[in-house]
Amino acid sequence: MNKKTPYHVLRLPLMLFMLIIGFAALYVARTSTDITLSSGWLTHYVDIPVGWQEQIIVGGLLAEEVLLWFGDWLIPRGRLWLLLPQLGFAVSTTLALTNQMPVMFFGVIPIMAIEMINLYSRPKQPLSWLAGVSLLIWFTYVAFNGWLQGAAVLVGLIFMVLIVMAYWRFFQEQQAARQRAEDLVSELKIAYSQVEESTVRTERQRVARELHDTLTQGLAGTVMQLEAAQAFLQSGKNDRALEVIQGATGIARDTLRDTRLTLTDLRATSEQSLTARLELLAEAFMKNYQLEVSIKMNYVPDYSGVQLTEINRIVSEAVINVVKHTDTKQAIVRGESYEDVFRLQVIDFGEGTVVKKKSGHFGMQGMHERAAALDGALTVVSTPNEGTTVTLTMPVTKKEQL
Image (cartoon, rainbow, N blue to C red; front, side):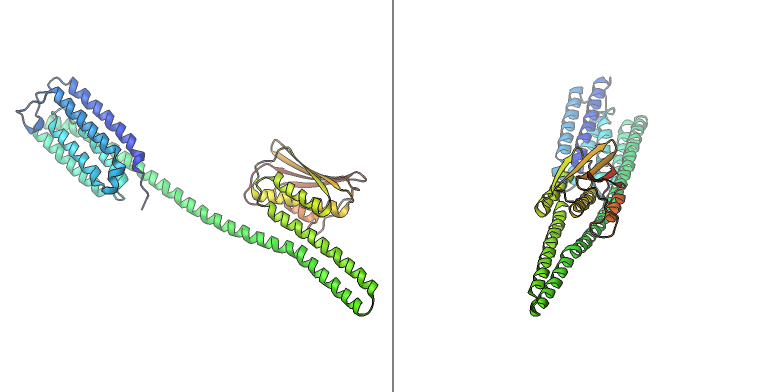
């Protein structure tokens, strides 16, 4: 069943419409010349002075406004508690006022029709009942006031029906648009859930690969070295065993450092800014390799978490190359934006040795692939005895997926 518009959204417009109708009725009451020569109260023998006419209009108008205001309170107790008093008001004012005063009737009936459209999931039946009652009131009016005035009232009634039909059509279109929007939201939720599952699965695979590259291989190398040392000790070759143990210690330290970098990378994915992620990376390189990495970010575009992760890994791979291929203890990571381009540089002051593309965890090939995934380009400029600059250039466009 389609969701209905909350009544409190309709309340103020309906109250304003009824207020306009009330002022129109008061205007008609004051400007009609033969207002007291009427057939009010279903009789030709009782005249209703203008003052009483105005009191009936004002009293009924206030009652209708109160009903509309407390509609939210009445509807949970039964929709008829709101509709029947309004119908009674429409009938009583039509019969009680003069033959020139069906104005209030024109105001209440459309309001009831609009309420029925919003309150009932299938409003055709209650609207047909309302149409029947309206015709009955019209026939009664014609019986006491003549066909000429009845025809004038019928024209006004038809006009009100057209207004209600236009609103009903607009309401149905709004309901259909809302339903399409809700269906689209549901589809997007399903798609987002699938993307999230895929992202989690991809992240788990990446973590597994990185742990295999660092922890698993490092532990395997350490175990092999210790087994060799044990064999040397059993054969009495203590000096050789000591050398092997020292090599195993070096492998274990390298594995520990690489594992810490992997954990730092995982921790950095929870940060919302590139600067915060790079600061965590700089802290890890200082602790593990005594390499001081200065972060200088002028302006970073509003990138998604996926993009920030890829940028952070490019920087991590560039800095680890500084550790492995230079003897410098200082590097700079600098980022700045120019119009629709973001440029990030990793600068070191080592020997200026260009690292060739090769497969591996921290290889240049992986850096170029990540740059391509970001719709960017990676360049490496190396000057002997001065250092190397790795530059990532990419658009400032935000992308949730790569």
